[in-house]
Figure 1 (cartoon, rainbow, N blue to C red):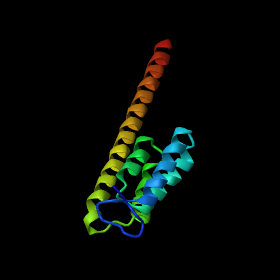
Figure 2: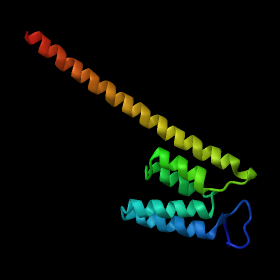
Figure 3: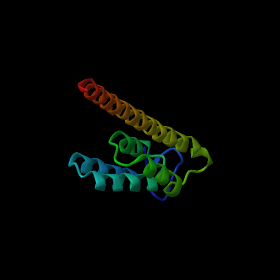
Length: 126
């Protein structure tokens, strides 16, 4: 359900937010990711309830975990009834942060294993 910018109902998404989201999706299809990210951020600034815009940012990995956290904390205004949305956003950010840390640890472990193999091979040569 769409709401006019002037008559905002708490359960409806702001029209400017939806239009910004539509622009972002078009730019995303054209692989213009930085501009798409800008419009997704605008969409959320117009209406922080636009969960679809946030999910798009997360799914496409258009921003870093630190930048997303900063954006949520500094740019979005949640009222008391919308705190669950802030919590949802923070959980999604933490989830991708955890996935990234796990991937980094796996990569480091794999590199260390490969280095250890090389050291063992070289020590067998002596």
